[in-house]
Length: 569
Image (cartoon, rainbow, N blue to C red; front, top):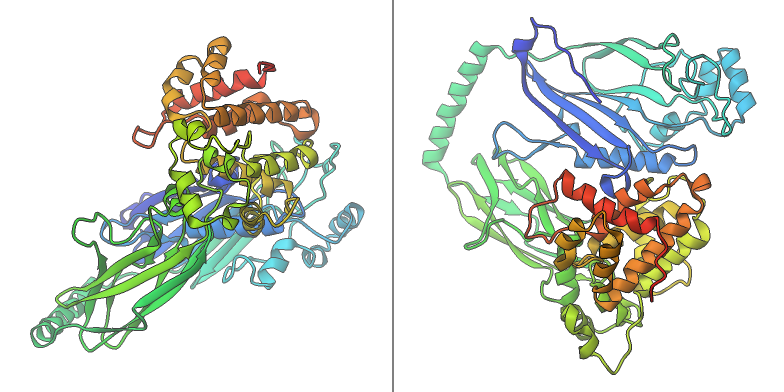
């Protein structure tokens, strides 16, 4: 939560107020981690305030770093002028960042930390602070400043008093709650904790800043504006804008599912100020294919200036299936248009490495070899095979009961993560997901390498990427109607295509096994139903997104299978 209060006499100078949120929990939305932000203009200074809650646990500092980067890259504020690209956090003059950042104190045991605190040796203790070390290594919060910490760690206390944590886990003290800033003309006047507040296991922190802001002299601004308009009029009559491009052909090699690739284009302007924009080709709604984006996609160049445009290639669940099948290829032409000038054409191509992510369940059941060991023609035939014809089309070869890739992930979690706390609720690491994806697509390892959280997230991403969910679209409405009728629900499941039915029963059996260890993993049927309900059961893309009532019914449908053993064949 982030509340912003403004004095009444300053309010008329506040404009362009926007608020946004970013979830960094698993799959970018589950769990309670993420950030909220408010941006505004005060006089002529852009200000952004961010409150974030980053990943927990002492050893997870890399995950916290990743959460920070995710918030920075995904937090985008719409501008008043819809033709202008969204603003990111870093596009502001002043940034104030606060919250439970969850960085801990490392390399010291509990008693040593408490001794430092008793002696008020905060500077010595601060040398072991993870956030300080990560900032020193420029791994996170680059360009930000934090004031001197002259108060004791704000975490973790017994609620209602000032005693350190006496619970079974006995968490070590740490400065989890922090306030940082970035920008010019900022002076921190105070930075303190509030020990008197005892309603939480954290102690709140506060800071006061004095910040200089830019104020426009309207008379000088008007004169300068008029002079520029007059000079532009003269130039417009005399010249046509033209630019030089660093290159016009771009090739993205070995593009993988959910792995960003970036190529850079430099646009160098001539002697005439110009407005550039990537424009749509005839009969197309957007300037590029769904797996491509140009950042920025429009802009203004002064004479003899240049700008670097990043072409970002990213394949996700909405584009992977057609790339796996070969129905779509990584080929596009971008049209760079200059206002009052000519158009430039850029060729963008690449090769996509097919993945089990985005492949249909029945397709994977017929793939006994890893998908990247198969010919493009075989992948195409299997991916385009209609679901209800699959049993007839390949009678000579009996399919696997469930996809081997799904089995590898579930089997890994069953053997290694049955007692794992926060399973399916804490994200893994991006690098580990990429390794798991490669293992599944290449079949290079018998066991998956990576943390339990990374394998769990990979499983959820696999289910989310299915072009036809585990419970097929045609049964969606029936399932919602039978959300509280287990007998009817079982009848519907029995009508699913064989491979989908097998996968559903296999997953339910696995989740019931996890519930047997709920004392250790802290999972319950409600949590699992809320996580898997929308993944296994959701409406087709042509229908509106489910409202809260539909989501609850989907969860209720899954919930009833988690509480009962299904021994039917």
